[in-house]
Amino acid sequence: MCLKRRLIALKKPCNYYRSKVVIITRFYNATLSRKRI
Figure (cartoon, rainbow, N blue to C red):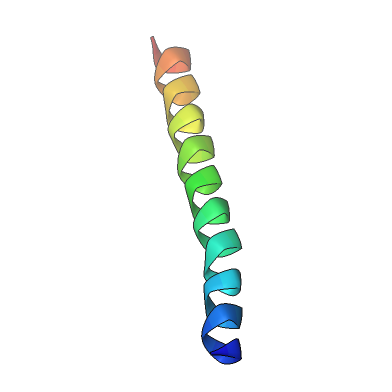
């Protein structure tokens, strides 16, 4: 039980970090496309 809780706790920040990276990459791509135009 304790181990399961620990795994879930580790997964949560990973998902948060992943979503942050996706947002940053989208923003970066948007700025790049803007510069081309």
